[in-house]
Image (cartoon, rainbow, N blue to C red; front, side, top):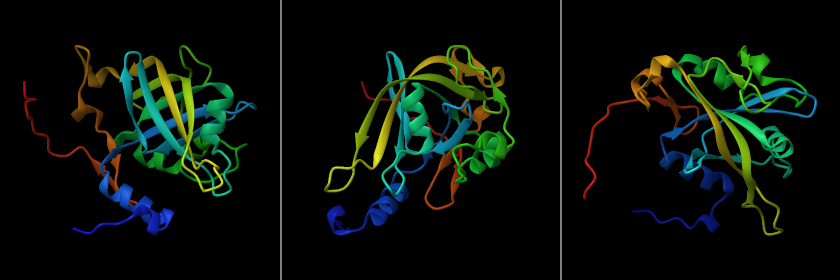
Length: 205
């Protein structure tokens, strides 16, 4: 067993250890809107459930090298709203295109050829291609990480889900059919994974 002190290696090395071992990771494609009405989209694999009462999800958005917020975090904090989409095979290639670095006045949604769809309870549109999307209001933003000077390296967005949109083809009796959803997950480097073999283990009483 190799023991590594994270303080003795670079941030990049710690990043590689994390993404290589914490895998597969679910992917959220998040849409936000800036003050000029430009619809931003970007994928994030530092994504998970927070609680079901009320339903909340978390997105960890790493900051730019200069310490400023990325468009997703900046827009979510300024507008207080965002839409979380579960990445699936049906629009995987388009989702990947939204990771491109383009100016904030340009839309990744347009770049990727995705279809905006109006939300029910918030102003920020979602993406029609996704089988699951969640309209969220910003519950809290937590600034985390950073250097010795105290500048944060990450914005943890906690979103409270105010509306779920689920495609009829994957929904039955209140449950999501994972096989029909065909979710994508993230590995290290440029690698992704599809839903693989499943098995059941009963929880102990």
